[in-house]
Length: 371
Image (tube, rainbow, N blue to C red):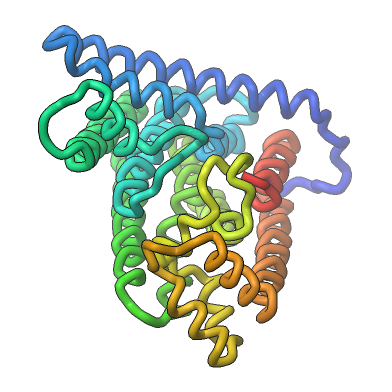
């Protein structure tokens, strides 16, 4: 690939970017709808009583922002110049379905109540158990159903990712599948480390950094970009640059998520602001606060993190510690640094101007969002 003088390119119309983003989301949603509908029909043929499983997936899946899918598609467009590579829509949809499965299981592990403005999957089926006046423990029924829904979506996502590589030669297919496998392994490892951190009294900055990288940075941006690029035949240089964008912008994305997890408006985020503290999330935000806190502030954090009985007043006390230690400002500054680094890499990409501007816009949406 040859280098382009980016600074002499004409500015890209926002309408063009919005139209292309709409086309991407529409294409991915069509694949997701068809794929889930096919499986739903097959299961309903076995018994109409299992239909609620797929219906619950459809209702929640429709609410996703499709950020990962868009990164995947633009990663492909960076190679093709805007042409739709065979299989890339399926791969983008597979990523979204994998992400949805991860959220279902994550919400269960964290005992969360809402996601995307709806009851989490285990809460949904617990409520259904009560409505139907079924026998047994409603919570256990909800947990079991959520595990099953997550497992279903994981297997369906793997089906889609395999379909995405049907048109590739054996060597390219193996390369794409290797990225897909790496994405899964890193997400699982990051999730376990996140769980492990909640069992310890102190927040390890080293582990917080590693969780951030594995569970979000690479999984949210790096791997989607690389999967889209690999399907379209990207060379190693471009794939490496995509990875570097993911490590910087993806880390900024998660740091924003951590701030929203404590300071966000539930009406906008679709998730209670108390959950992350109540669940004992050992984020970089908390690690910075602990490193700067005095004994009284450390005692507040120690009493609050992981406390299932946490009250709104307790949350306000934690927020005060975060602002008094300026941990929130430190994270905001880090987000700014990472975003600047990501933009510099985007500016060097050997891709067309539309793709470059689209990636810039997507990164901005990721790091400066309110939900």
